Length: 153
Image (cartoon, rainbow, N blue to C red):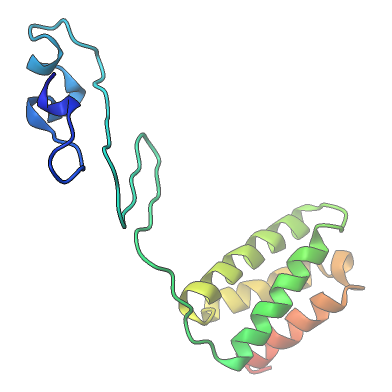
């Protein structure tokens, strides 16, 4: 058994000589008889995150509630309601673009406690573009009012 196949004393997995890129070498029988891609073994992870493979996005840390101005809390709730209502609207390019912007706005408000002026301006423009599809939705009116209040008009 090689060092790469055993857990170290902390239970986090040793790397030994097999920790090199590709995982070939002495740990797999030496001289090229090993696998093209080595085994990945993780003994345990405590308080961390692990990603294996291409195109991973890992956030390691506690997501804490960010204090939010009451005006942004109102916007967040209106955006959440409109996003839910848009699921029942006949799909169109304008509605899809608005849905994507609403999702991004929700994420930004959750992470930072606010939405940037650029995002608010985009939401206003997308609300106008999708007005024929969402004109009868009270949630659309609420988002428009909240954005207008934050942009000053």
